[in-house]
Amino acid sequence: MDSKASIRSAVLARRDALAPEQRIEMSLAMAEASEALSFDPGAIIAGYLPIRSEPDLRPMLARLRERGARLCLPVVLDRETIVFREFVRGADLVRTGFGTSGPGPEAEVLEPDVLIMPLSSFDARGNRLGYGAGHYDRAIARLRAGGKSPLMIGTAFTVQESAALPAEDHDVALDMILTEQGLRSLSQSL
Image (tube, rainbow, N blue to C red; front, top):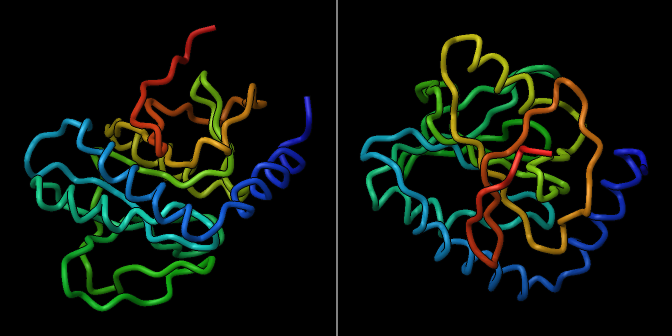
């Protein structure tokens, strides 16, 4: 099996090759598909703002907020740690590490019930290949150690799917994947 770095490079090249207009249309389709996600009013949902050629989740986040979700975004505190700060309408955004932006230090830190994550690649078994820093794996471990088990949803374009990804013991499998083709559950069985 190819190394994680080589898979990441090849898959991100496919994503980068999508025309910006195509990524916009696919992101809007993802926002529509997110209507299939059920959650209780007041549920805390962590999303993210796009960098590079990632899907633009802002239309989806607006829909989730309208449906009663309380939103938060990841903020990089240091090389090891991300936290999730509340994302309220009209709040100023600041640079939050790794080219991202999000709420400033005055925003409340929340523990998400639903964790919507960026990724480099995914497979049908729920394996997720991130960007290599391990921020989400450590954040999930910290949430679980505190008794929280968020629903984990990866977001990607279908061109990012791989037949099979290498998985290590610390890698956390996704529960669902959201692409421009819809929201689907993933199987963590063999």
